[in-house]
Length: 259
Figure 1 (cartoon, rainbow, N blue to C red):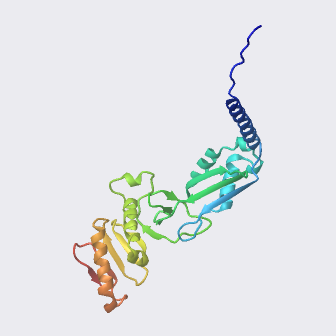
Figure 2 (figure 1 turned 45 degrees about the vertical axis):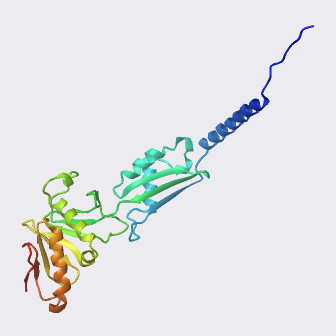
Figure 3 (figure 1 turned 135 degrees about the vertical axis):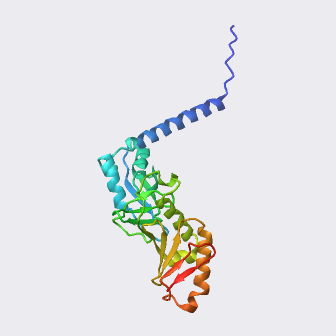
């Protein structure tokens, strides 16, 4: 009589392997169905700037994607949606600093846009009309809103992409001056314009009064602005805002005024 011994099977291991196989099949099927499905809708979210403005609208975003991809995104299979290319397309827009696109579990295509924030508007004597952000990136005027920012006018060097790397450049100096003004609440509330005259001097135009504030060059700005604030706070309340035609800060340690 033959004595056959059956192998000692570990049924718990078999059940575990079968469970993993079933789960894998279910996941592959779900992924396949999702990839072969279509977005149920497209939700575009443009994050407003700090002042509530939107220089690019949700409609602008949809039109840009339509031009780039040639068809309505809701009629495109999720498997063929190139979300990375969508992000690149939107980040080529001068008003867009960052774009994120993704499809959620409900097959809704999300396009989230963070805008580039204008810091300074350039209106130069050669007809240039554009914005700069704090990194010196150029933006055209928006058809949706006019950003309420400091304005620079006059004899300004033409824009070039590498102007921030130049040693001496009026555009670079304007960015430096604007940053110095905006970091001080008093100056930010009282200065509305920077003009560059034909001698390359920077002249500030205040919101109140008709006087010119002559900075000269863009060096020693902290010292110049400290003198200006001291003069405004201590002298102006007594002599009045309309007494002087110019306030000159060019000379170290002095505030020279002309009536």
